[in-house]
Image (cartoon, rainbow, N blue to C red; front, side, top):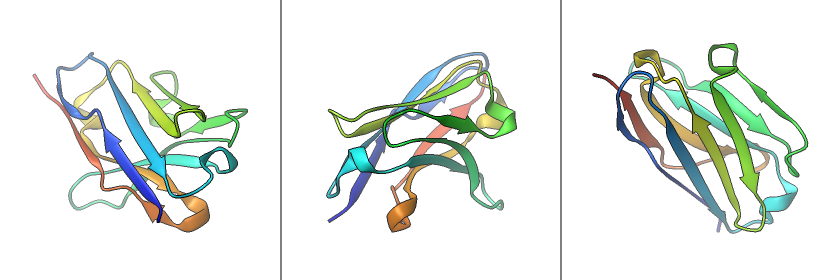
Length: 114
């Protein structure tokens, strides 16, 4: 069955960096677009970034452009989200998403605070 397991979240100071990973299994990872979303309490889940099946294209929500980078390693069935220059507004639970199956990972908490 499909599994998406996020990792790499944690507490970081403003201006710091984190790299999130999403390990996928149960489907042909290399054939599918992948996305990252985030959610804060009381708000709807927000699109962050997406990447084509071969990594040939990426796009981002405006608030993270120039700071976040989505990438993937199809040999490792893993999609990444490199987050730089973090601000408290980036604090959220970050989710990996497989749109073709409408499948979400369990999420990983990112907290940006001094």
